Length: 147
Image: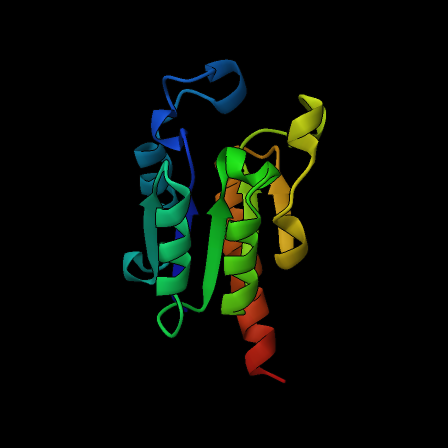
């Protein structure tokens, strides 16, 4: 199974940004940690952008190349109908991930326009959320193949 992990705006600043909320690890640290937890580095590819159009292009590029997507859309979670539509249009099983507990933060963070087109939403588990999302996608793919 091939999984694309897409990270949105400001996630390139992990390790420097609000450590009390997001932790001290960088996105690269989380990527390295996740590779140590999955069987094959070749089956998981990472992408990060601060630009909505690049994220949409990356989602589109997953068609016929990836079996699942893990997306941490950052602030785009709350208002990007364009990213929502890209996820819905590709029909690739997608899991939405957030490092922090978005439901126990500012009111605007509680709204996700993305979650309804994802098979699951994970929040508040830090970097483990990415691993949990991968496990969900592996189980989803396994179940799909056994039907």
